[in-house]
Length: 564
Image 1 (tube, rainbow, N blue to C red):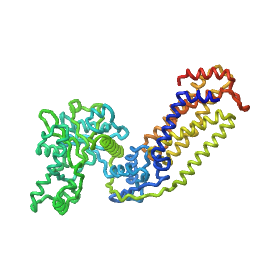
Image 2 (cartoon, rainbow, N blue to C red):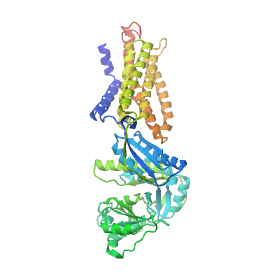
Image 3 (spheres, helix red, strand yellow):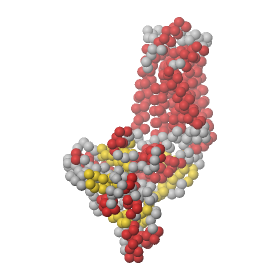
Image 4 (cartoon, one colour):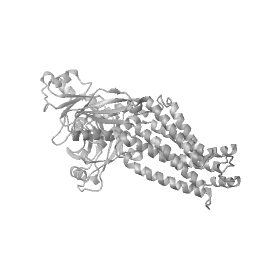
């Protein structure tokens, strides 16, 4: 028997399974153990943090449904991470995240702070707007395409035929003009910027230091904020301060914003506030425009990105899209810079890309919102329910083992089935626990137990068939054909749920698909290798006869040749 175990351990499929299993267990315990941070549990199990979203006015049920759906669509970009969105009355929405994921909370707050209105402008005309964007065709740009985009991050999206027509009209004859891509571009506002902030990024832009003059930078910012009927004027902070008591700047209406740095002169802030402006304070780094130069008929300074006004990127229009003729070209890219160095820069780029994707996928909120104070939410089910869930899963495994034992009446089959099923669950828990194990994900994990056992029974029955003229290799291939077909059909059936944007079921769909993939690639092949060796070994159990020792030699030889 020891020789058979040694042969099993030398099988590459078994070795692969054991390696991944040990890796999963190590990952859980290196990060603190299953209940001390090694696994992240959802709101039901570990409690959560609640963000009250306050609507500026009461809304009807239809508008409330749109608000909830939009926030859910934005949250769906976080995939397995649990985010709950539910309405409360007619003027409030609760957004809840697991307590174990405080970083996610800050990203949710950032996403909720944006109205989500996408606008792309060319020479003061709207070229693309949010309603033109096909939300199902938004994806992250990576690899060589990212390098070509010229940004630290990039998002590609497609537009409707109506959007393409609008773009064609706005871009006609505008070769080398920038197309300014905004998310939440201010409309009723003025911008007050210091000379230092205006030129702060000139020395770190793609242009040489000192090439951008103050006049060129000021003109570039004014061009970026030009839009027919909604131009935004840029004022230098020093010029307004020099006017002193003679400052006569007045808002257009009671909603006009004054956008300026939190480091701006307190006296100027007080004057603007007293004049009736709605003060919008930005971080100093966000007030600093990033520039590039465009070499058309003459060298021109262009604002490439500007966080304070929601300008993500400003790629130049090429000649082939400015002919005024609609074409099949309807794909666009938003890109932008990140801050920091090394890994911090990579993380910032990832955060900005996910936030932009979330806003584009969700679309614009129909009503302005404000975010309330973060509250702690107790777990409705808690650690006791989690413990009972684990006990229930173990009991289910025990029942399945008992039924398998009745069917085959030998530990040579029962033990491998139990081992493979437990291994698969541990690996799935390690993967999904890196994000969040909520009730939906837990249901998917438990369902993986039944799917795993079902597939292993198919393999076992094929190998134990008698009175057929196929060798073990052919029978194993037939079993795997059945398993792969079943897994493929089931995975395809889950894809609509995975990409539905319904965050309530994404965890279940993802864990189920992961279970199928893991089974087909790792655990089922490992079980096939194990069971070939065991069921044809000399059997000392009277209740089972899997073949003679002579047939075992031929099967062992075949198992060394199989290519699954």
